[in-house]
Amino acid sequence: MNTRRKFLIQLAGGVGAASLLRAPAVASDGPAKVKESDPLAQALGYKHNTQDVDQEKYPRHDDSQICANCTLYTDPNAKEWGPCSSFGGRLVAEKGWCSAYARRA
Ligand code: SF4
Image: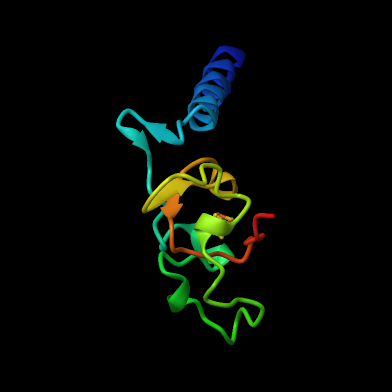
């Protein structure tokens, strides 16, 4: 492969990677809602409703733990859906839960 062709391929790869890195967590109509099917949500055991959490898998969970009283829910006044720093500011359900839960003091 000649040097110019190699350079163009590397450039295209770099632009693609840069585009991914700049992909906004905030769509034009506001932050996206986290889906339970998202890979990160699945890794953290996120559920929209704390009562749906697998208690055997997460024995330290209890139903009083909800996103709205988690320190990572960055807008405590947000109703129904609010931003979560564990998910890069995307929205999680007010009554949701994940294994990164940390009760707000
Ligand atoms: S880190 Fe806290 S606010 Fe974010 S999803 Fe988990 S429990 Fe909810």
